[in-house]
Image (cartoon, rainbow, N blue to C red; front, side, top):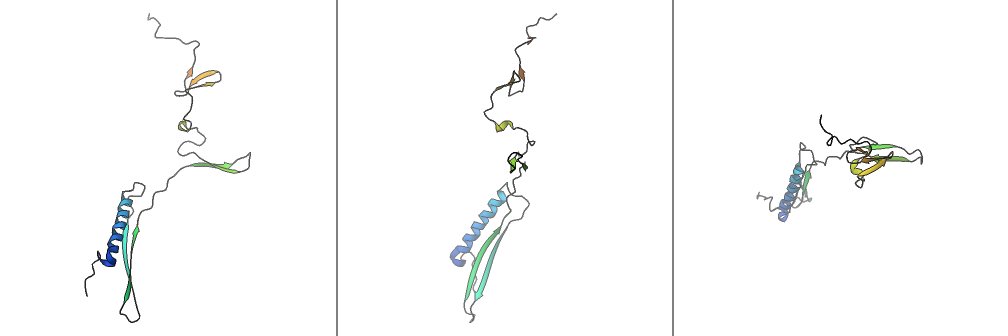
Length: 142
């Protein structure tokens, strides 16, 4: 029997398919969105189908890869029924507490708000009052 060189089989197509599969597996191994522990595999399958006279065969070569699936992305949603419209609703709230406003959700928040007639600094939550303010820096020590 004459030796069969896999690099030359099917005019080099098997080698080319193997290199593509290897690149796919290595990329999957390096992907941080896949589980590190999952095994990856490359399978080269060669099938032979002969004729009735047994003097000729069709040879099919397939190269398959088994890679790790991408990890799912988790989020949270509040779900319920809108009492005014009677329609169901779903609203994503991610990792924050349901119903809590996110500071990043409103990038155009003003630096000051007027609440109950008082000016509130939105960056600190401090109520700014100009009445009855005592400046202790100016007070004399006894």
